[in-house]
Length: 275
Image 1 (tube, rainbow, N blue to C red):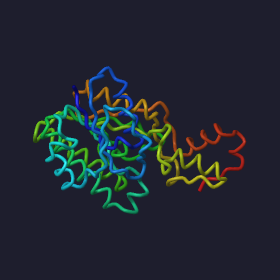
Image 2 (tube, helix red, strand yellow):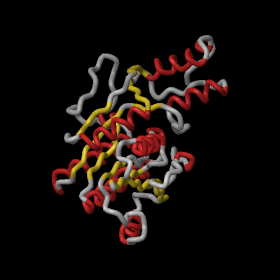
Image 3 (cartoon, helix red, strand yellow):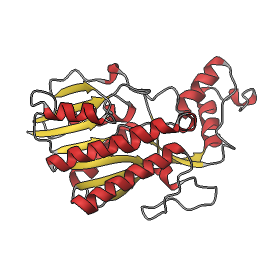
């Protein structure tokens, strides 16, 4: 039996990862789903499957994490083979309002997960973001795995820091881990604070559509289900430290908003204004 630990499994992307695991060829598996039920997580995302055991806890709380690890009757009572680390604070605006919560969750939380990986000698995928590279301008070439880190918010800076922690554990302790850096995700169950749900909600309520900055930043987009499939490919077959996961759509935020407006109602673009 293969044993998996998925952090953030009640969240948007994490729930797709667990769904894909349950559909995989590895039928004899067991999944520890660990989630603190922060913004973006929902109990509705927990599958009704005996192979999934969900625990509500904050991985950044070192004492609680060690307490559970020390209890042989609790959720880390099995030898862990794989760890998929998705749990993170992940919204730019909130990171500006409360940067220290992002430091605590994204750095301390990742350090605690790395200690679990080191103890069990598990294979790990650390799920990061292409925002650690900064922003693309209109005529810039796409990011590559060799692009320098240039985070521009407390969110992306703490994700870059967590990536460096993973790399340090690879080099110092020899853990078996890969880092994935994905573009923007979309799909059902996405948190209300994200761009696409915000645009749709604003249009439905007849409000101005909010735009971050000038709206000219270029972003790639991928469906969360495709992202989940890519994560599992890296988990089982990956050997490199870093994998960028590209999307199927590349456009500026303003162009994306215009696409959504036209998809909902081609006549809306005549009356909709951006904030």
